[in-house]
Length: 377
Image (cartoon, rainbow, N blue to C red; front, top):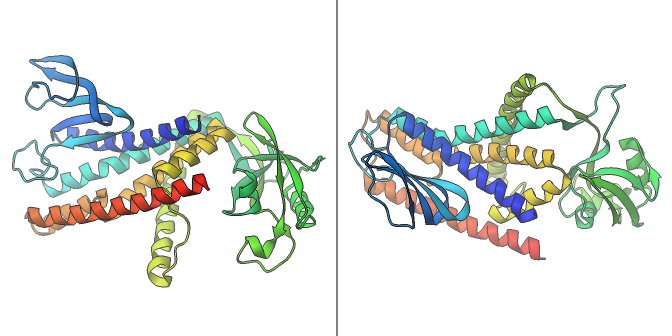
């Protein structure tokens, strides 16, 4: 089930992104030669032929009406793709991508980003309607869920013990705790002494053994020797809203996350080029599948929240003006607009995109290798 949830996450993120491009292309009457669910080889599909919608098997393209779109189902069952007419070529035909004015190209390129943003808003609306865990900040508001793990520090004793964000601490060494302060005080006094945390994860109850370590060994900004296990805690309660209020809050939450994502991206680039150091961690498809599946164990709402967060992250990453990403398409279109409709020479554009794509593939291979080794070791 871990991999099932993971592939669902990855599949829907890519599918909604490509569906956004599809809708914008159709809105500007640009021909989408094929819109595929999953990745080739092709299993079959639907296409309009002689005025009628026909189903076909296999990868051989059937005879289709002029301007018709092939809606295909493919063997690799996640994600999707668009084959847009003359997206990478040169054509002056009115139904081709390259035949559009520069501002229409920008909107079509933005379609995927808008698709991911819309998907995130829908997911957060559902979560807020169902009820999401929120940190209790007001006095007199009961922490109906209890003391909950909000974050787990990488390579910390908590991570090694298998503690996950979203876990609710019910007991430690058989004692019940109702406040974050009490939990922290107890752990501080157990430096290098094994303790047993009884936690609630979704509908399951687990007992996990963990050995607190000196704070200075777990957190780089601390110099104290008291015991910690590397978790952030909060007293949380389950809060739900009416659907109309959930929708408004979901929009606010989505755009707040977009702002935070851009800020995080800026800080990461600043650290790389300024200090030559990497902050945070980059994960690839394998890491994403694993993370989504693990979070699904905590609860369905947590799984949905993670999918919404990843949808926002994908939208922001696609806006990076790096060759091969949607951001580069937007830059090419802006240059075309600045040059009063004169496009960048085709060979130059193709070379830039090819180099960028190769670099992205190398990065993907490296990140995937790290994800796999982390899962194995």
